[in-house]
Length: 257
Image (cartoon, rainbow, N blue to C red; front, side):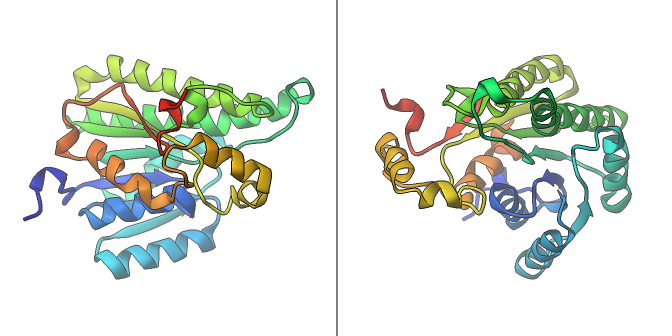
């Protein structure tokens, strides 16, 4: 018998970065557990594919809003549009992200700021809009921020990305403490190395792939579907007493000396 504490029926989730990879898998997983989903990403074509898949496979409602989160001054309007199409938002998943690889001594201010804006500032602005919505309708809410191994430790050539993800973890903890009186639980998930379109060039590099497998006790790359269980836990009644935490879904990476 399926446990009702994982049931998301009657709830609406807004998921950024939902066009592919982890964001798509999380959106589909939440829908399979009963949630309707507002899908946000830059590519309208990708969103249409995900929307059709969710509605056909789960029978849940799904709405697509093509949007570039680098447009910080329009994020409040994005959230207003989500409320317009869905009526409410109970779960916010900040998954969209950007990165640029290169020696730290060569990182430009423009590049650094862009990565910070997409990965961190947009999450703050969306969370603020979500918080105001929860307060206005006097109900609880859930925020799930998709972090990184870079929340735990750094590696060369990803200075802007590492700073943004470390900042996202600090934001997660801060909002969890500050918004607890509003019954808003705020948590993060830290992916290990995940097999997606974006990481395909890394996985194709034999030396890099060997290094990843040597650092991962489960000896494989993760899959986007590996994030469904943790996301459902944090979004559902099962996660009622969890806030301010990060859950590393990394195949044991952070446990290895």
